[in-house]
Image (cartoon, rainbow, N blue to C red; front, side, top):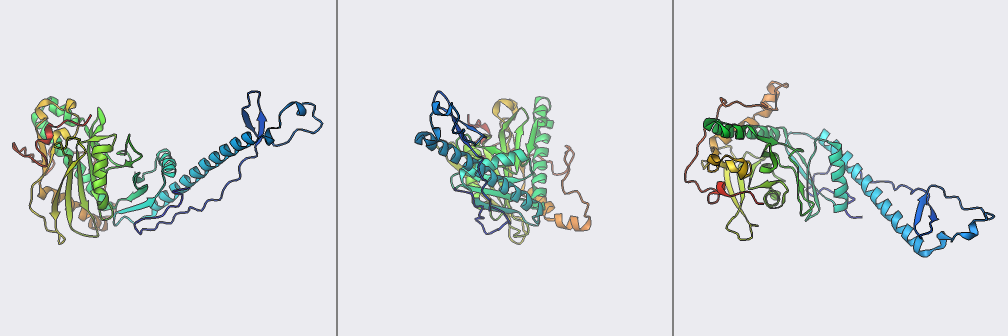
Length: 387
């Protein structure tokens, strides 16, 4: 059976137990019915030879067609049980690995996993409600287990908080309907950010997903990348923008590999509306910080208000408005994540969750709305979500 062996593809070898003892199927006896259907019972005992009714019933055990059908059903049932046992074993291994993993650096581990086992494992993961970040690339039958570092988590929370603060400041300055709109923008993190595809078995959990509370399936995904994950960013962009059942117009990715390099890169993808088929993405890559930790001057990260929600939910006077985070502001957010270990060393009880709320009076709240910006594609803020 394909996919039953959990083999890491990137050299990180977790301790997984995949040797499963086959279970003996229940004893089965065939009871014919008058419409030639058969039933499986728990009584294996044959009729006594002197049973007067025995001669009146056909010998189902000797019927080749029924025996073949029974054999097929038994094989299918045993195969399903085997897949379920394997998925359960994998879930236990993933829970253990997540619990004991060091959090000094983020880890992205890939395994070859067949579609049948993936379906069973996904069901187990969903039912378990464990805080496990995972994904699946069906084209290559690759299962991914992510373990974010503490610095990764701090960066995710800080970035989400700063983006929301920017949006709320913009909306509160306008007031009225705009302020109400800003208050309805929320964000989710794994596993709540999980998104599947209606056209494939792909599934991924972006690190952040912003959306309007009235329509959570449309919004803005954000990925925090690192050494193993960066090679999959293009595929993740295609999934989030072109395939996901959570519609998105923009993907933001911050390549931040704490404890491996000081270099940080910002990547953004948008649908290229010059493509008649609408299947091409435009990508923009910007270096934020060099290997020696020096910030690289450059344009700010711009997000249009229409990237957060469908156009009908956005007040008309916000359709062409943007929020932006400058390189300096992004650098400050990165520095906060970098200093996590120092904070823990100074105070083991330090709050690494960041402030769960925000106020318009927090620092770094300046909002700039350029009038003639065409980044990264012409007037992306006026493009509606795909249908």
